[in-house]
Image 1: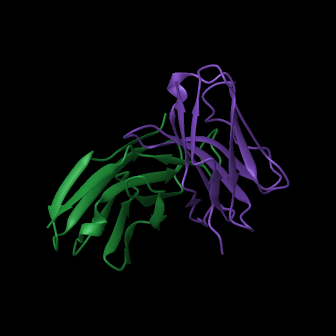
Image 2 (image 1 turned 90 degrees about the horizontal axis):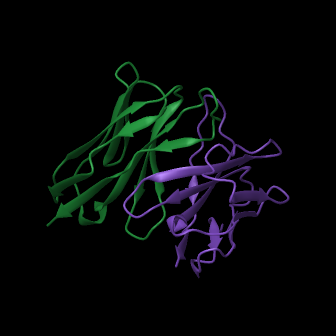
Length: 114
Length: 117
């Protein structure tokens, strides 16, 4: 079956850097994406990696190593508004799965302290 | 333009009753998804519609759950004979078509919070 592992909680102070790791085990793989969800809000897209390496978007970066079935989201210059849940999600596309289907991890609750 | 909208925002029902949840995707998005999120949990895939293709229903937890998409736009998720374990937030998302090597992000609606008493 499919499984994604990420830490349940991370805490940090404003201005710090935090890394949220995600390891996955899926029958197929077409990319790893990250979504942010504030309490009571809808998930919003942050980044997507289909190939190995680092993708940078402002204060956020995402990394993928397909050989290690591993990725991470790096948040720099943390701000209070970054306090939210962060989910990694895999496009499986493997046997019995369509390319549109995403498998989500359980999410990492990030708390940023002043 | 408008984002994904869902209605109702909250639904309280009694065990055994049927409920219908509605999703209006972003205009022009051919792909539509339903997810379920229980308290403190990740998103659980339910069903995926892509254009006129047969939907991917592999995530529906039981035959009490069904969904349809009329005219390639609005979708309705129906839960029959609701159970307490159906209580969750039901999220709808839409996107442009995702091809094999071309990912299109999913845009989520605000969700419907379903409470089964």
